[in-house]
Length: 397
Image (tube, rainbow, N blue to C red; front, side, top):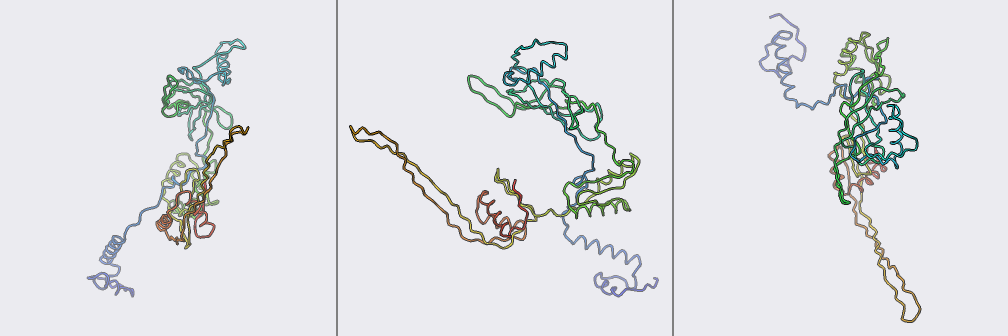
């Protein structure tokens, strides 16, 4: 065996790995023992759950986005459940204009009592890279007083973008999930009948111009949640994966990439970037309160510093009873009603309780120990925030 100079920590290594032959540092036996020991060490350490996410889940490329389309149209073929033209005159005007384009002239002043036609708004989303001839799903919603669109057919409706240009044409039979019936003054209804959907009901007529990278090959990656730490991790991961200075952060949201000039190479580059796994920074502590529904949501970073809270409900009850004052006979007096109100104030006892929590479960247990209703819990959280005990951002919806 070749003589190899041993480092000072070899004696410790021999203690940790019994049976290791002496003077074997740098040999195959030593490397094999080192690998076995490292694997055993990793096996003994409990595994932590992976928090890394694909980059496509936390960021998008600039320009790769949907575009909203909207249009006005007519639905025909309704079973007497359409708009009442006297209350929705735009439906009659639209039908007159459409008939004139088809060579049919309606005499001026004609009052068309139509019950099978309804004016509707048609909406759709134009996905990125859509080409003429592709089909889109559309949503049809009544804007008049039509009782139901069930069984109706949407006539050809141009769908326009924000620039006013037509990008798609919609037409087809509606699928309405609701149903209803009425008779003798009684009615029953299931779900919504004033709106429907047409699967593949629109045909793309024009594409949205989009040139990724331009002539210089520069691409922009936009984080869905702005964070300087996450942006720095994304830049480091991308540069490490491609072995060069490919990415650079412009701010906490936008990351500039130096991509290939060829279209096929650019697609492969973008696909590899999206598949990279990133561990985003921990979200800041936040408490979200929905005052309409009484919902309270806390994320995992919320903590509570030591504080004392006293909670007790205050209720005021006003009970009014009406009494009749009857005049004596032949006194020519009038009978009057005299209200008699009794007001009572009831306040529950509330003792000071200490609340404190270094993690989410401790915070939840401390707040549950107060026994407060959701409405009271909102006020308590606001007071804790004002007192500096709640270490979180408070957002009220």
